[in-house]
Amino acid sequence: MGRRHVRNGLIAAGVIGLLVVNGAFSTMAGTTGEENALGLYLTVIALLLVFGGLGAFGFVRMWKGRNRRVSVDHTGLWFHDGKAEQVIPWGTIAGVGLYSSPFGRGGRVYSLELCPNGRIDRDDPVLWPLVRNEEPLDPSLPRLRHRIRLTLGSHAEVAEAVQRYVPQLWLGEDQRSPGHIGKPDVEGHRARTSGRTP
Image (cartoon, rainbow, N blue to C red; front, side, top):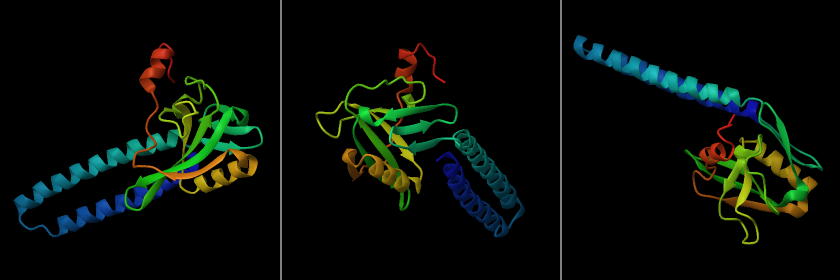
């Protein structure tokens, strides 16, 4: 998943970068007057620096996650965060579903929802960033669950693998509102683990 995410991000960044550079040079080429040109040049350079800085920051974040991966077998779902690996056994899961929500113009974001049949360790060293505290899909389920953001393309492969190994746990697909991925409870995790957050 991580390498695919980096590849998709580089393609998107390249397209956006070309559009920004093309727009900047087109604007500068159509400028007349020495005073107007100098101000415009400085503005364009500032914008290029800002976009370049944001692009570099985004690339570093993507590159750090380049070794993230998910694999599925008869044991459970294995999550590798780039440094360590942990399994979520099928015996601890009540149901698995796929969520999707709109992203940008025509894009979609996907996540695999693993609903437990009991309590889960919300501070597991590898899995804690995946834990979400939300209303359960069914009142009989606990609020805490694991949510794994899937890259475009991998969502179908992962969903197919889950249905192949544990079809009885498959809950289907559901559409959610934009921003459904959410964020992990970093502050709560730090407080519960005395600040030992990687």
